[in-house]
Amino acid sequence: MVDGVDLTELDYDILGFTLQQNEQYKKFNKYIEKHASPLGASMLEWDLGDPVIDEGLPDGILIAFRSMGSWMVVNHESADNHPGKFDLLKQKYIADKSNYRRQIVCLLKQIQSYPTGRALLAEFGAGRPSFTRIRPYNMADANALTVADDIDQQQYIIARGTRLSFDKKSELFKVVGKGGGANCDVLFSPEKAELLRKKYRKAHHGHAPAMATDEVLYHELVHASRMIAGVMNFTPANHWYQDSEEYLAVILANIYVSDKGGPPLFRAFYGPAEGPYKGKDPAPDDALWDAAVFLDNPQNTSPSPVQIIEQFRLSQPDLYGRLVHLPPVGELIRKYNWIYWYDQIRVKGRTRARGPMVGRPAGSVWTRPHLRLQGFGM
Image (cartoon, rainbow, N blue to C red):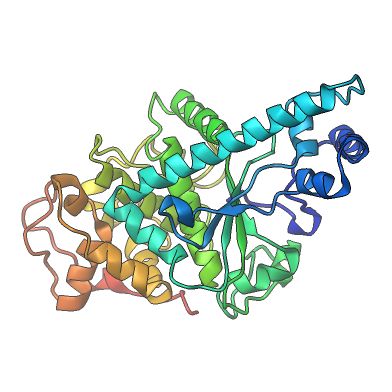
């Protein structure tokens, strides 16, 4: 998620447009209405999304595309009244729309091919009344964003009694959670995700762990799963993790990375893709170098990893349980499945893991103080 976005101003089809682009957008919509039938124009001016269940994917996910007017702005098209020009533009638009759907379906199937991916995607097919719509990211920067589908629904995506923002100066502080869940939108474009990865690599000595295109989408789907469940909690977090939600999404995306079997290099922060990093925290590490002892909180974060994971257990017990019981296929997924290792301690009440994790110093102990759960009331 992007911090500080004022949801009272959002229209996701034009989010991020300049005033000049907004004027172009209005002009293009009039152009579309002039050349298309009333029904055809309405279908070109807004895409509510199509389900992906026919692709073997969860029925709680839809894929939508930007409207034709928005597409014309983004692609620098012109409203040309020459005979046949509108039909050619419409064909190009429909082709791009189909291509976007293919890309997203491919990424979802890639995620689905791993146990960690299936564990997460199951959250969208559990008969929930709320759905998640994936649509392009229009803003100029390289990023992805997950937000409530409607301004008035923000109070339902966050846990009962919590705040949408902990910044008392923000208007979002006034939004108090009612829980229950609501529809949400994942604003995501594969080409933007790739640009974001390149920015991270340039700023962090060639490292951009957990930033491949499917990994960015996984991160955003973690947010979406919590929005439709109404359990988000934006408790601030330090060490460039921003808040508890971003910290959790980084943790779960890192576990997904380990499931893919690639190099065991994990993301160590959420903050901006590149410096200067201003504030009391030191500049973030390029990667999570102490991944083998992550539960010991080598980054000295607040909240600690075990506090984040315990809050996750309480708020999404089904997803937590699926991640605990992932099939131990391959060395990395068990070694770096911090949900599993935390649960070993929690359930059995021991101070030592069964079979030390590789990389843990001999005789090291997880002590009870690490399991304090204060500050995460729902």
